[in-house]
Length: 445
Ligand SMILES: Cc1cc2nc3c(=O)[nH]c(=O)nc-3n(C[C@H](O)[C@H](O)[C@H](O)COP(=O)(O)OP(=O)(O)OC[C@H]3O[C@@H](n4cnc5c(N)ncnc54)[C@H](O)[C@@H]3O)c2cc1C
Figure (cartoon, protein in one colour):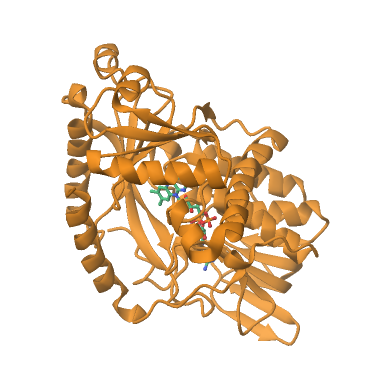
């Protein structure tokens, strides 16, 4: 049974990584500062050792701030070490056209600029830290899974190209078959040139090295329980000791539990599962013409995301079951292999080597939030990436660090506090109903 953040009080302590392809291929983990042992002081205490926390700690330490990062399990244990590996200029779950409708052209342009800056941040960090994380250059394609979805791609293309000036193009089904893969459910593709694939855990471990080298203390196996308020000081309690800090950054994203007052009732953790197949044989690869190095997802609301890995395995991810019991997870693994066989008829004999899940943090407005708690000016958070955190979390950590060192570049749409989820106690029921509806819509014209 997977840990469920809505049902558990804490995220565990010192747990091993999920049994992912990434954990199996990351090599030896770099050292950290071990469990907190005794009481310490810091300018800023960061809770959570994923991209948000590590990037924030790195940028703060680089600016001369004394930082202590506290991670319940091990750096990269959450989404950051187990995700789908796509990095591009993405920011939340809305269509680009919806940004214009909701916030107007100027704000939409600024948000697109911020999304692109997030992608640039990832590339900069990789270059700055010389992080060997198996970067695959290529691009990203959003693929119409039914003919009726091509118009939607055209609308998105128009906004991206005409309003944002983005480097995008529309490919027809023949171009996809000739240059990327031969398969079903691929009627057209909106291709973004600026995107990479990377090894998510190696990237997280690179950030860990950078943060420590810059002077941040990174404590694994140190779950934060209570956070007490003593005037201007905040005291974070872990099993091995306390941290007294001037400011606190919460960076737990989908792995934060309902114990955290500032974010309780404001996130919907949704399980996303990934299957990684055995490597394709040379024949299978040739028959499927699966040569693309692009990251891809389809136009379903409950989307499938997929790519070819450098060793010719196929990675495919999609929304997991509502209840992560062993039985449901096993059934889902079988279903996902069925999805691969349906999409790529040449891969009928493909089998899975790795299968795992992780919690994506969904927000009410489908956007990330980089904000300060409404009742505590010393408590900040960055979370709710809606499945786009490789770039967005790396960048949010940086933006929060800039803010804490005196330069606020966070866009007002993103700096609003996380909106509350109405009737939050019944979140899973709402999710069940919504997913039923999406499932029905996704398979109709
Ligand atoms: C299966 C899957 C596929 C995904 N694919 C993609 C993708 O292809 N591209 C993309 O852009 N995004 C993707 N995402 C989303 C992306 O991985 C996340 O948005 C991003 O990693 C979030 O980083 P984070 O640092 O905010 O949180 P996390 O990496 O989740 O880190 C949070 C950490 O907080 C720790 N923690 C929690 N509570 C406490 C506590 N009380 N005390 C101390 N520590 C605590 C946890 O142990 C955890 O390590 C995917 C996510 C999943 C699950």
